[in-house]
Length: 451
Image (cartoon, rainbow, N blue to C red):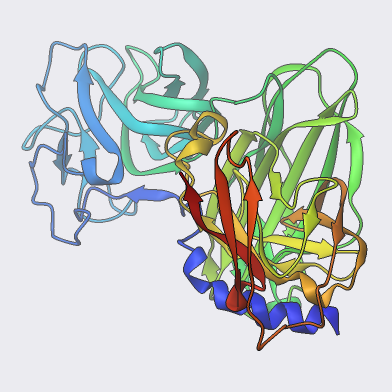
């Protein structure tokens, strides 16, 4: 009875959900602009994709330039037709090395966790390279393609703000197309973090009862030498798929690629599958990492990545507080999209998530402030007693159940009464607050303060 009536009340709060944090990877194919318009051969694309948070410039080299161009000098079967990207404008060839023709510099307007681009080396001994850098322009990671192999080349890390793309040496030439940027993540707001930075080419399938499969998993970590542990929970639409798994965290800092991943029997579209990790040091959660895979139809999946975020906070009700009438169960979480609250051990109830909380910018990042959640509750339905609230994010419990005291004036919704009262010396000595009963809130509110 308690759960069903709370669900009815929570549906009133639809205004509270302003959207979910995170976004699918940004794909730039150099054939179409952000509005879908055709990009002509030879166009300088330095600022063409600025609205997506990506700009281009040329570094070094004495040949070609001075800009970065869409160039239709594209080998058959490579990339997306008709253009590749190059510091060389047509009719010049589009292949480049790392010195003579300049480097393609990619600048990002916010942090990313992974940057990828398709590469086609000129010959069996040639290769391409991608290097990624943080906001201080310090190199985080670098990847060189296999000699002579056409492939998607990726580099991952925390807090990526720049990438540099070129042939791997002065004698190694390659062409490039289809840039993919995974925005999200760092810099970490806590001392320690660990999580999945990216999943290569996730796909959705209605086979096997609904499934997702991915290529290589890239992990990012920065952990103390000892005493850190990870609790991982996989969930479908915020409902945990099995029990949490705990293990020791890798020590030190770095990135590492692991084997592919798959999950099956997930049901019908649409759904969001989350893999969430909470890092604990000394028994306290210090950071949370999440990758969300969004499936709406067979084919490529949308993904969102959040690495090294602060743990979520349930702000109301406060521990040992007193509650009655209609109240707001509220707080914030750097990661989403599924937030829920369990009362007194009952099944969790979804809380609308994604309202603007600019005050969480120091914890979640200035680019990630749609972090608030709120759930309307009629505390009169709980009954006069001590109750508890447990916060869940993406299927995982955070913190201990929070106890609070409920007092019910008379029944679940008191009607037909009115009252006022005066509280002397409030809000300060010599002043008085007049309280008035508000039936719609099932509570008293301040009507006036004198003098």
